Length: 188
Image 1 (cartoon, rainbow, N blue to C red):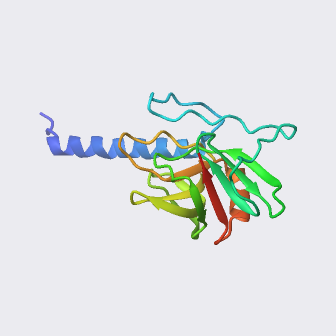
Image 2 (image 1 turned 180 degrees about the vertical axis):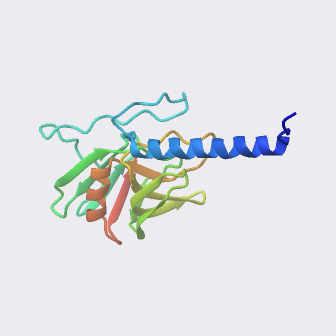
């Protein structure tokens, strides 16, 4: 009669095989296409914020909100989920939509207090071009973009996030415009 293989040997063999299979699949997935904001739109729960509207064309630029000050500044309109980069002559250099976090800053005037080239956001997403300008309820509020260019997923229930995310090209433009001390005007 042949020798019987102990159960621990079976379990060990199966575990090693499963780890190898998962590793191979992970490597293959990493080499495949990665989702972006324009790829597929995930279904969102009723409590999630809607997807931002497309940026207006060059023929129809969105007007800087009244009451947003004068001079060189970043204007963030909460209700429109839109940012404007305004130069010293009050001309709009760029405008774009954003995906706000779950914690909105209060309307008011702030300044860029610090910058961070890259880090991991509180939602676990790798982000870059982080421009901090205020905090509310213990949550830092900052502009940033996801390194992979994707829009952020809806925050998990109860998670407080202060990241105001944007497309990668908009994040790059904001990073170049928003140095420490740049005025940020938040309007409703």
